[in-house]
Image (cartoon, rainbow, N blue to C red; front, side):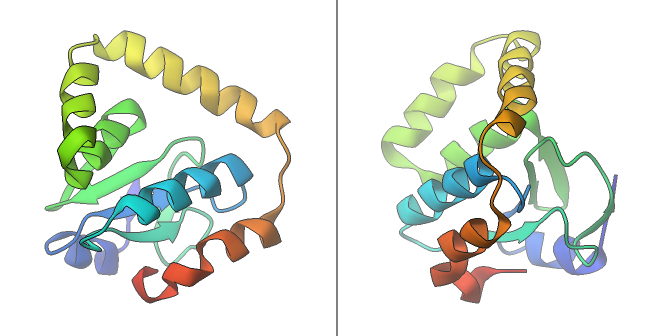
Length: 135
């Protein structure tokens, strides 16, 4: 996976979520995260944007934080930890599940989310209120 320098630089101060911008499920998930991000720490970008990533798997969420890359279930857990409070507790509990099981569940969801409605314009509208945090 090749991530552009601007994402690396931003990740030193804020965690950056890279998601499938053409997936309605993914956009709703991002909206859920941003609504709970009261301290506005997360920045985000689409995996389809060649200015964010030049090679990689669009079937996974990627979290870049402190110049480290997390993907699949580990990215989701790190996102929950960053939200703090109750979500941090949920992250700690979920972390006890073996990685192979967590990623199997993640892969199953990623596989079948493509059968759900895909509407890029609706996705863009979902996250437009947080445009100031788009990378």
